[in-house]
Image 1 (cartoon, rainbow, N blue to C red):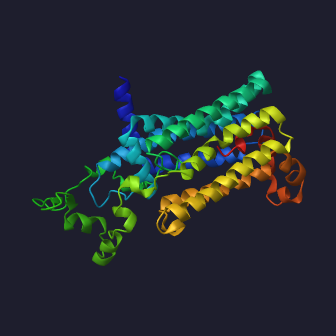
Image 2: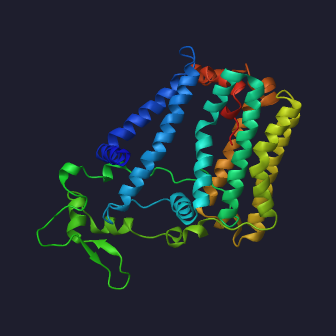
Image 3: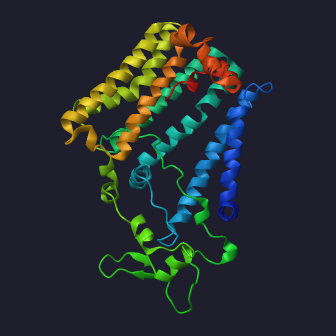
Length: 357
């Protein structure tokens, strides 16, 4: 009974993939404007946001499974990030479980914090925060060692990169279609044994704008396209591994310091930013001295992760004593308009809004 319902739901998602994606985007936009509009609007907004993210995870799995059954010319080319994360998810059940647990907490941590604070108060809230950060640290350490001591890239699961329009409607026949009676839709390479589309399939999918040169140009492989997925991120060793472990521990150490010294003390803020800055500086030194070619020869995936970690420094202007003394009630907030000011009570009182963990 349950399996048949899931099958019907999967078919519904595939047959209306474009509309479902539009609805998800519209509802996510709604969550950004709800805070401050009515009583408990913030909690309602976070509930909707968390639910959309969790449902979106299931929708992503439906689209990914369906994309595997598409003919070669319709099958989307995965990004380095998706190739890498999907490889480890398929290679290790432990990686899969740890990455999903981490993703679940990242999607729901704000909601859990708000709910516990509303129900049991701040003392229990901080115990919950410490427990969540501890679980996140353990998940990332597992991911570090299950990837043979490689940098933990975020997100740790594949992103949604599939254009819903690639899925044909069931009313138009099966996925492969029929173009000319008696002509096969695919052919198999004599030496590679890989299945390829016939020229009739390619022509039908590029009917009015068909250009052989353009089609072949899109199929050109770059260096990263031929690398094995694990090789998209370099292995860490010596102090490189130590830096990654310290970076992973940073949020938990910050929470412990907050609980000891309080949110108005500079000590937790300085401890956290010092750890973050030192790990980035030392990791750059590791790349320059231990990786042939240095930072210039890092993969696209590694460069994206470095940029993401640099962007995390923005949250320090919204934390602790720096926020109280330099950011709060200053002209900088008025530059961003009323919607951003509606979020001000949230990043002042909800730890995970600015935790970047």
